[in-house]
Amino acid sequence: MIPRPFEYHAPVNLPDALSLLQRYGEEAKLLAGGHSLLPMMKLRFAAPGHLIDLGKIGELKGIKQVGSEIHIGAMTTENELIWSPLLADKLPLLVEGAGLISDPQVRYKGTIGGDIALGDPGNDHPALMLALDASFALRSAKGERILPADGFFVGLYSTRMEPGEVLTRIQIPIPAAGTGWCYAKLKRKTGDFAAAAAAVLLRAKAGRVEFARLALTNVGQTPLKVPAAEQYLQGRPLDDAAIKEAVRLAMSICKPSEDQRGDVAYKTAMAGEMTQRALRTALSRSQ
Ligand code: FAD
Image (cartoon, rainbow, N blue to C red; front, side, top):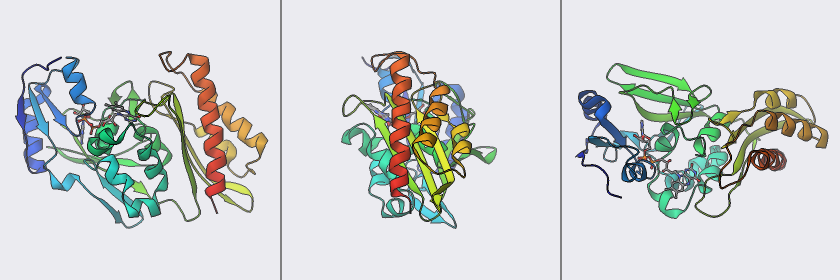
């Protein structure tokens, strides 16, 4: 289908983008990689009168280390994440997750900011952000605020971002040396969203877990952080019994919707299986 007519704007700096957003209000939509928005416009689920393309705004791009954090511009593409030596060294979980998103075409254009801002629980970055303790910088005409990923995703396609705000960068603390990682994702074929996936960061000392993060993709209305499992694992050896209990705790909060990827019982079981695999792999990668 063909989208409804719209006016296209391509500001070259953030202040201009913010004033366009202010001027056109609810009539306006931000355009990043377009891989979610443009299909929705073609189906006429979205019909903005004004499209504000963020693609020419240099300050929204790039990956850099700032003190003990990595800062990633919202317009950084999936491939730029995958190709970054800095991320391979400091945040390999993010590189692994980005590499499992869709297909090369989507990864060339799709951006980390668009993937997060959309609030789709089927997208992979939201759960990765929860596991990584990320926070998000949001700019509007009123100034900047920083929100943690935990609590940012409030419902289906719904986040704590307010009208007039642009997600400008993602801030992620660099995990301590020796932290293991894994993003385990079950998908039916290349290009499909997850039936279920689990993101894990894990560090052990003297055979006991001293740090654990666990978050799930596509088994609820939002990405799901699993604090009960994180706390349960703290201080325990990661043996079969501990993994079994962490899996049980993860499955207990899953509320997936039935669709072509499976029914509720299957998706819940697969979230458990992905959790188990991610925990074991993260342990094997921790030092
Ligand atoms: P756009 O589509 O341009 O925008 C998405 C939404 O976010 C819009 O509402 C837009 O206004 C808003 N927005 C964008 N940038 C900002 C910003 N900086 N500040 C505020 N609001 C903003 N994703 C996955 O994670 N995993 C998958 O397995 C996966 N499979 C896919 C398969 C296919 C065939 C396709 C077409 C897409 C798939 N996607 C998947 C989605 C893809 O990653 C999209 O690129 C992503 O959801 C949106 O990013 P985008 O840059 O294309 O944003």
